[in-house]
Amino acid sequence: DQQVKQNSPSLSVQEGRISILNCDYTNSMFDYFLWYKKYPAEGPTFLISISSIKDKNEDGRFTVFLNKSAKHLSLHIVPSQPGDSAVYFCAASATSGTYKYIFGTGTRLKVLA
Amino acid sequence: DVKVTQSSRYLVKRTGEKVFLECVQDMDHENMFWYRQDPGLGLRLIYFSYDVKMKEKGDIPEGYSVSREKKERFSLILESASTNQTSMYLCASSLHRDGTNSPLHFGNGTRLTVT
Image 1 (cartoon, helix red, strand yellow):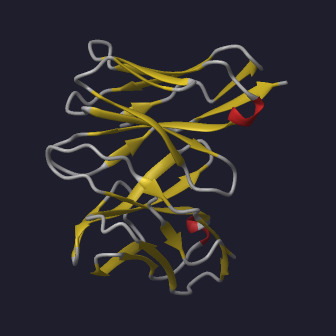
Image 2 (cartoon, each protein chain N blue to C red; image 1 turned 30 degrees about the horizontal axis):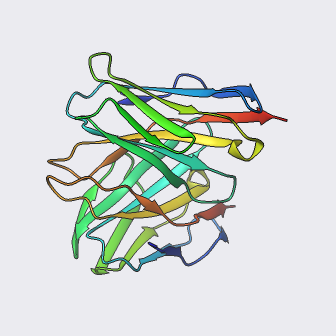
């Protein structure tokens, strides 16, 4: 049973436009959500996170939105750049209890120049 | 900056061999994790440890064991490597405790091929 889902395996976006990556979760105990970016043959790099007490967090070109009632989060990248081409993973964790971070299957973003 | 170092970037081993993957972190983090990444399956948790000598099974522990004798070091052991353990292995650490939030920091990964 997949607790964190990324239903789009891939996404192509024109340079300068907005990229929107989506993630759904099922476990209502999750209260901390993260996005990671991964290039081939490298480890994932932390991008941005959001706690469930917020519905939006912004860091430069990256904004994460959280809709708790829908159990949905999204990552917006504006403007998209060719260097953003990578695989993006969302992850979720519960602040109390176990220390596990559960990851989605990833979305491959391709930004076209 | 947190540094998580995995001892090998690439490894090739034969079926049946015992394999050790080593990971060291330099930020005094309590928690350490081993994931594997496979196409279409994302990152799946193998084992994690929230303290020295403490370990807990993740979602896919079969065929693996771990060792955490020192806080900074977390080893993944494949007792008898099999071809279905060919994968990218990722070590991570975090400061996550009850009541706090903290991101995972990953190493660069070890690409293991079992022939």
